[in-house]
Image (cartoon, rainbow, N blue to C red):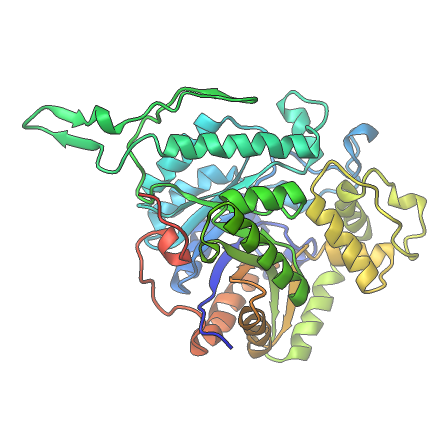
Length: 440
């Protein structure tokens, strides 16, 4: 057993579980209700969580891939959400310590705009900003940005690799203490401490610098979630925190060790990169009560919606061409996200599930389900931490508010009682909370 403290982030995404929003006490209006996001952020901060995190997809998910036309099948509640970059400033004003992280794609943004936005959030929040770098996996997004389909997977990562180098270069375009604002001398900033990036690469040509000094953290925290070969390489070279869909402790330990070894190869301290598997806690007073609650929520997922939700990761297969009560067919390679495709295959094969059973399970959310009483859930989390399978977790509740409240009010106190999660914030910035590298 080790004495490491775990990191915990809250992932709030409306419709993460495709049935739970139908519960009588669920608030589906969290999708576009700022007051609900503020409440969730305050709950997370009261529990001393590291950060609250938001996903983003700039398109309505389709039931089939892009070549099959404008087919939607069933309306997916995950389609409705704010641009998360608009949420972060509002939540910064409602919180003091909580980290504020949002997804922004490298596929459909420009480095200068993105670097400027997140540096601005870092100033607004006094050093609590985080950027989740993705290359996008929803094929429908491409058509909202002038393309018929995504760039090929490896090319997306090649572009993203240059993208993040430009962003980091822009964040470093001002030295610490460059902005003086000296009224007596009339010097506003020290031009010797301002640097032009002058980047010219395969994808981008960016002069710089940013229109502001060095942000409070030096650089906002970098989150990533890629598990493919290029995704792992990019994460090991550039990420501070890596989210993962791992559901098996041994596999997660191997994943963590792989990322750490790659980080060393890039000259990084492996202890400064944190691996956070996603978990969906389903809490009950007893283990049986939690299992019954899970079944109740799963039964609220319509069959058509479950199949529709699975389709974008199918490599173009039409599941209706198969017996839905039969085994999951082999899924072709896809130009969408590799992690989700692999998770579907592993779930179906590992538990011998039919297509429909797999679809319903995947529609519960793609993260590992921890179902039980608070002590049962804490036992699993502690076991993973003690066995070096992770550095903490990304908690993904099924719905709001109960899913969030159950985790922060029942599970987190149990982790604190065991001495494996903080009872008070001890640092000022998100980098302090996470224990990742500082950039001055």
